[in-house]
Every structure is written in structure tokens, then in C-alpha cells.
Image (spheres, helix red, strand yellow):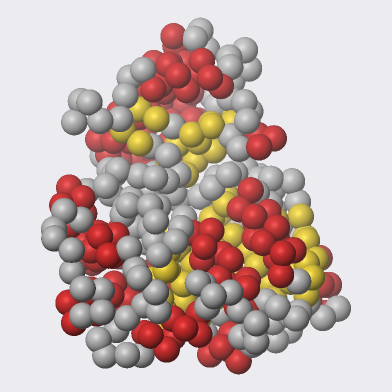
Length: 376
């Protein structure tokens, strides 16, 4: 392991050996019974992570493919109210502009969403609401239950990006009124990058667009998924499906509740370290917004540069993330998602603490010790 970097990013994440091994077998017929069983098992194991009984499909494409599938299939011909307080909310809004009308409800990255503006947009006829549940660019969890309630109240569809929360935090798509939910394989699922999954409610099917993309046509996925054996409409990335199945089996073995609690404990440990160091967390939370359970965003201390700081961490074999777009050089982010646990968290925090000392940043206390107190 000493030659492998420890990825403590908000994806990709370290891949368990069982998951890597699942990809090494000989090719199989993707129209045969064996692949159909693999696909069916993936769907069955993913549904509880989404908190849904709705139709669910696995796409050979990253999370952004699932974002585009959601917008292109269900958002045409109506105004989308796009909630934005980070990079990925912005991405959903940008995709929406390719397909129809967007009313962007934006707040500064890492600050609470304006739900009063959302209600106003819904009262004025917006037919779809889009929101990122866990905004990794800012280390912030957005209020899915409250947004879902507003969408239901006004008869609008709710499209929720759960790419970095599903399988790492509580997601109850059906209970929250989420019509279309998304996840990416390389995040909390701890599988290789290249797959995404999307769930679709009955009201969403009623609103499916007449003109849909070819490769991301979810009606085609529904027809192929109803076949026996279960199929995808186009050639799937079979080795990635095999890896995803093994990753989902690992999650089932751990137990979803235990996995969610582990993610929450790891993020609390990082926040405890930040408090001991005297480093400020980036996001601003309130009664309905919360710190992310899968990535922690912290402000870079004054007097040091991002490249020097993260380079010093990387020299110890640990990779953490910087800020994106206008937050470059202003924040750093430590991922707490996937199959990692106390050893990886403490190693990452030890590397960060060493880098701070090496660059002459005065810290108030021992962040590693504070984190160990949470993890122990």
C-alpha cells in the first residue's frame, strides 16, 4: 500500500480489493442471463440506498450523464427552478439552459438556499425544481425534505442530485417527494468511476419529453429493463457493473444504517480536528442546512498557498482536494466517503497537521488527538 496514494477526496475514493478483483474476470455476454442477474442485483441493492421503490436504472456514464438524463427526459417544456449554492447546483442549471427555461435561485457558494424565492418561483408556474443534496464544492448538505415538500405543494417535479450523499448519508427519496434522484459510482458507493444510477417516479414518467436524447433516453432504459433477462438499451460497461455489484454487496454486508453512521462519525472527526487547529469551516449553516457528512470544506489559513499546502500533504502520500472555480486557493476539502475508516481519517489528518506545521501555521491544539476522540 505504501506506493498507493491515499485518496481523501470527494471522489474518486479508494476502491476495496474485492471491487477491483470483480473487474478482472473474462468478458460475459451483456445480452445473456448472467449479465441480467448482475444488473438486477445492482438495482435491488441500490433501491434502499435511494430510499425508493421507484424504477431505477444504471447508466454507463458518470454522474453528469445522469444529470443530463434527468433534465433532458423530464424538464422540457417547463420552467426549471434551479437551486444553486455551489458548483454542482450551477452545473444542473447550465444543463437546464441547454434544454429549456431556467429560473436560477442562487446564493453565494456555501450559504443557505433561499426557499422563499423557490416558493415564489413555484407560485409563478415553475414545473421542476432541481437541487444538489450534498454540495461537495462547499461541504454543505441542502434541505431535501423541505424542498420536496414545496415541490409537492405546488405540483412540481423534484430532481435531486444525490451523487455524493446516496450510500453515505440518509436519503429517503420517496418520503421526501423526490421524483428523480441520481448517484455516481465513484463516490460513497466506493466503486470505479464511469457509472451512475437514476430513479424515476410515476409522476415523472407522466411528464417525459416527446423529444429525448438517443443514448440517454430513459424510456429506452425502461423498455430494456422490463425484458427477461434484464438489459440496458445499449452496450453497458460490463466490468464496471461487476464492480458496482460487489461494492453494493459490501454496503449490504455493513448495513446501510451503520454505513451512514460511519460517514457521519468520520465527518465529525474532521470537524473536531479543525476546531482543535483553530481553522474555520467554510459553509454557513442554519436550521435546515447542515455540514456535509461526506466532505468537509475548510478555509485555507492566511499566509500559505494552496499548492504549497496540498503539495506538502501529498508528499506524505495523501491527496486532499482544493477549492473549485472562484474558491481555488481559498478552501481545502477532506473527503470522508466510501470504504475508508478511522485509520485513513487519522492518516489524512496527521498529514494535514504536519503540513500546517511545516509551513509555519500556528495551530491551537492537536487535531489528530481531537479526531481520535470522536473515532474511538
